[in-house]
Length: 212
Image 1 (cartoon, rainbow, N blue to C red):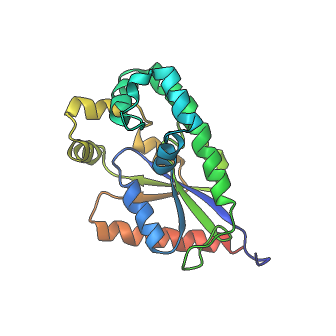
Image 2: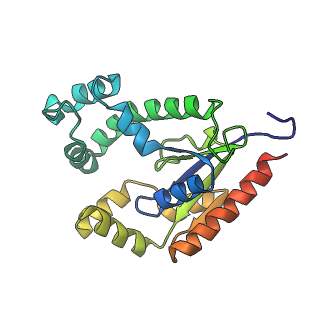
């Protein structure tokens, strides 16, 4: 790595249905090395993993599908209705996800455009603040929209009732609290083109910080 280049570990977070995934895809399209914690969480409970076995021990083998995979929808219904169950699941999954993030952001591979971890990497972590891992990263970017938009998007995306959507949103810190704590905020309330322009501006600033 050149002497004048200092890598940045960046976390992308926000609330459920506030546009994190779109922002992550846009960063990736711009050549940034990205990690999706939802993908890592699914990998942590694939058949044959210690993570899956730990989930089954805690929540019961009735969650195992005939094909050997975890019934994630059934597990979701359990943990969103029971704060204790949710904390127990997080205690199993979060250490596995953050271990995977640490391992992968430290690898020497590059994206095709060359913006590898030598420059920066961005990990999408929905529960960054709730899990107490914000300090693991050099910068935090929050994707935020209006609360009414968040509710409408979640209901439309997951087919939830308003009550169920509000319950799921209520398990996370309010989006305005996350925005206040962030180094950068991407407002996803407007058209996608506007969000994309903000992503590009944030990336330009992050790259500038990494070249110090």
